[in-house]
Length: 273
Image (cartoon, rainbow, N blue to C red):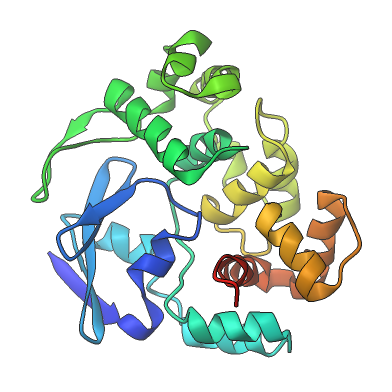
């Protein structure tokens, strides 16, 4: 099945290439995207972006297509921040994804102090080693493993896959989630959710914010990484050096739109707008 959407507000390249997802690859005229045990083919055809999948409802929600990003952009521009307004004009097709929560926990544990090609490689090897083999019209692929499967391996397994010092984080956090589940996290607000995530092995403030934003849909989260630190100094004239304080500065400034603003600003700094 397939459906389409106005390409003005759905640019697959901008959506996928902004650090919120690691399981995708170039495919035919666009990209093949993987989430949990599902996949889709997404591409732009003229004025429309098209999504083809056996799971249309899942990917309609995954790409947040029920939300009007024209309104979000108008709100973001209303803050009167020049670099933010430039990013909104340049990246109208950027959207925040609604991703599988457990997959995001492990993906962002892997992401810390890492680069995107290496992150993608580690995740791919974990899926091939522990994930269920799936088939779709676009070819076979491996699902992201369940926590029970991840917890069946010790740190040495993840080290052998290239996870480095994150090996113990993956082993211990998957064991905890396999035992406890994450249902108690589901309905927490941003502050409480972040506080709880910080109790898991290998999750610090930046990783917790990424999980809150990209996994649990907390749009008041604002991850601070090296790009955002650079932007804070150069475009906001900031003098703070503590990332927790920089995070507090941005969340107090942008409130419930912090997550959207973060992605536009991240885009802006990487694109040197």
